[in-house]
Length: 222
Image: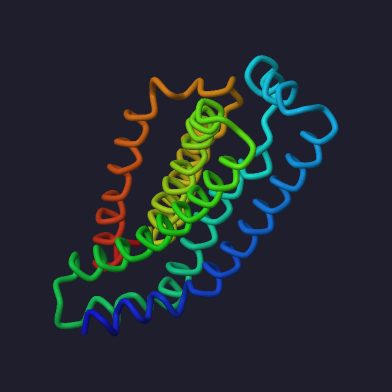
């Protein structure tokens, strides 16, 4: 039963996942080809100086990728379930209703996290070719809010799509838009380091809000 449920979820999001990985790979190749080109022309030490003291980032192309991927995965996974309230059929499986929703949500979040970790590992490996450890660390610290924002986007869009009332959908969307913007606020290199732990905890807590709107959906509140 559980395997069938998870396979159904994979069928819905697999195309988005492969496209996300493909786009990420293209973006990473573009980043490191440009880095190699720039280092050859301006010398590595000058390039590093621009990063450390002038705030010139070589990975800005990745900034909104987590947001787009999180949004796409959430839509691919949950929008089909809202068409004619198809998710109610899932809730009639011989498994607790909350259990079904938790497994669905955990699977989607786990796949999204796997995509993000793959991107970060490849980024780290490519950066190690051109940069010392302190620059790589600063780069990852700068990027972490973006990827947390991608996870938050997934959780909040799931909340919005499962909400049965359009009024509340609009309210949730307005709050979500304001909240997610925080993750993509312009800041200096590594500026978010002091607050990474709190926003990571907040993002984790957001994963549970879907249980509330899922309850409303399956009870047919209109």
